[in-house]
Each structure stands twice: as C-alpha cells, then as structure tokens.
Image (cartoon, rainbow, N blue to C red; front, side):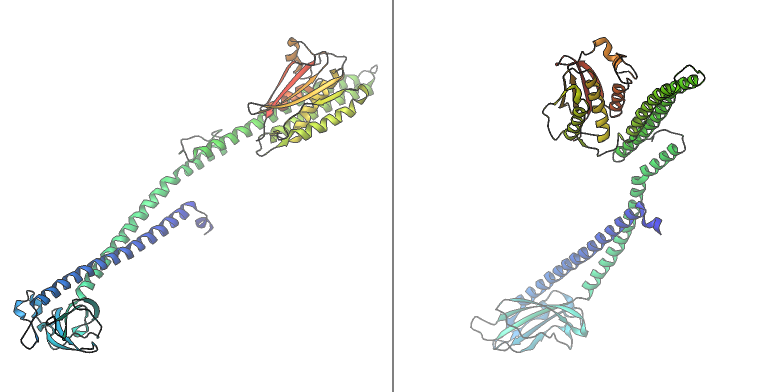
Length: 457
C-alpha cells in the first residue's frame, strides 16, 4: 500500500483521471442542459406557429361568439384523439377571475385543458407547463383576443403539445452523450497512461545509470536525458566528480604524509644506533618537523572534505582584525606596525573561517619574519573574486626565486626560523578553494603576496 501511495506514476494517473472525470461530468451536464433548452425552444417555436395559425382562423358570429372551422387547420393531429397536439378557446370573465371552455379541438376528445385565471394584456402570450389529457405533461401557450375594439368579452386561445416525445428525445441524447463521454474517458485514460509511461521513462533510464555507477560499470551517469532532467544529471555527475576528487586528494595526502614522515623516522632510527649523537635534541627536532607535516596534511584533508559545501560565508573584516591584533602582540618586541587598508565591510569569503585564518595567518607570519618596520594588508574585489594582499618592507626576493619560494619545504634563507611550509600550506589551501597565490614586488620595498579566493555573494 505504501508503495502505491508513494508512487509518482499512481499519483499522476489518479490526478489525471480525477480531473478528466470531473471535466467530462461537467461537460455532460452542460451539454445535456443545452440540448434540452434547444429542443424546448424549437418545440415552443412550433407551438407558437400553431397558435398563430389558430388565431388567424378565429372568427366571430353576429352574436360575438368565437368560431373556428377545423377543416381550415393544416395539421391533421388536431382531428386525431389524444394525438399530442391540442387547442382550446376559453371565455374569461370581466374581472378575470374565472374562465370556461367554449371551443376545443377534436384531439382533446372528452377532456379539456385546465389553466388558472391570470391577468393578460390583449395580444399577450403566456407559457405554461402542466397536465394534459391522460395526465401527460404538456407545454401550453395562450393568447388573449377580443371580438372587436369595443368588445368587453375577452377570449383566450390555447395550444398545447405533449412533452413526452421531447423528453424521450432529450433522454436518448443524454444516454448517447453519457456513453460517448465514458468511451472518451477510457481513451483519455489510456492516453494518460501512455503519457505517464513515456514521461517517466527517463527516470527508469536514470535508475539504470545509477545501477551502473553503483556496480562499478561506469564512473558517471551516462545516457541521453530530456532537458528537464539533464540539470539533475549534471549536478549528480558533479557530485560524483567531487567525491572522486576528494578520494584522490585523500590518497595523495596519505602518500605525501607517509613520504614526509619517512625522513624523520629514518633519522631517529639512525640516531638511536649511534651513541655519539645528542638523541633527545634530535628526537625533539624531528618530532617537531613530523608534527608540522601532520598538522599541514590534516588541515588540507579537512578542507578537501568541506571546500565545496554550499552556503559557507565568512566575513573578512573581523578575521583580519583579529589576526592583526594577535600579530601585534606576538611581534611587540620588534615594534612592527601592522596596517589594514580600508575595505568594504560586506566582503566575505566563500569558505570556512578557520581556513581563512590559517591562510592569512601564514602570510602575516611570513611577512613578519622579513619585515623591517611595516606589514600592510589590503582587501579588494576583482572580477568577482576576493583578493587579499600582504605587503612587507623587508628585503624581498628576486623574480627568479619567487617560484621556488612557493614550493613545499623551501627556505631561501636557512638562518631564518621556520620549516618552509607556510607559503606551501597557503598555496595548497587556496587551490583547494580554486584560488591562487602570486608573489610580486611590493610598493613598500619588500614582497607582496596576492591571495585570490572565491567571493561569497
């Protein structure tokens, strides 16, 4: 039951069938009503023509009494008893409260048409539905006439037609209409079934493509899909590509970490077999190097797992302000001046705050090691990218050395403290965010590091 309730195919079919059934039901009611109204108008028009003929054949004798020659009436049904077509002439009292039959057609035989007294203007036409001979339903039209302009007597001419045949015609039409609409509903239901089957076919194709990916036959969803489904396929393939990239990065990081730890372990193993070496100091130094490698690889692994998550937003101004306060305290003895150029408060980094702190923190730390008096930070938005520049007034480096400075573990001056991992860590983190790091000469006289990152909208 849950499968049927949760089926998109069943929902579409039930919704379509319900809408079709309602539409066809309303169509049947409307068409049946329109047909009955049309038939009744035609029937009434025919009776009006009969009443006009009867009025034209009406005459009065010398005493002012009405008279009609039945032979002058063209329709033979007037002469056949209970034929379904009747006429009658009534005399209406002067006060209009009573009436009595004076003349009537042979078709009425021994019955008469009964109508209530009502006020009518001369020449006026009234329409009534009532009971005729043998209690048959009839439609009656009546008209008021006088014998002359000064005559006081008022006469009512009445024609009546049996509604039985009209009702039967309407019922036959409704039966045929109902059967036709039921057949149409069946055909439309088959068309809806075919439409749902064709419309949902891409979902079955997508399911087969997913099975191929799950069972390892394909790395991505393959196939031709409609334009409405293709964006979903593209997004899913992008997720698969991202997962593959994350796995590849994790394998690379694991290999790099293993390779980086081989040297400290080999050094400690060799030192342990040599009594002349200061073992505690050597172990401490190698453990410090190993810790730096581990921290760097763990940081990159964490970023690789979260870099493409949507909705990440880190305001830049608070992060830079906090880092500059820390740097001022750390380098307070050297009296370095840390300056932050004016920036737009709304600028934000499309990533995690910790990653922005680590990248900019490494750049500030590196600039502080070489700066003489000043480190300056600038933030701007260029071509939809967030650009952070860190300048120092140190000695700088030559254009030939700048590429080597970004390599992992490279130290251009062995007398300076550090492991040579700072700029390399920044480069790795920036590339994980599809960013970039560039080195160039600074207007302060030293080195300018330009960090390009995705801008949060």
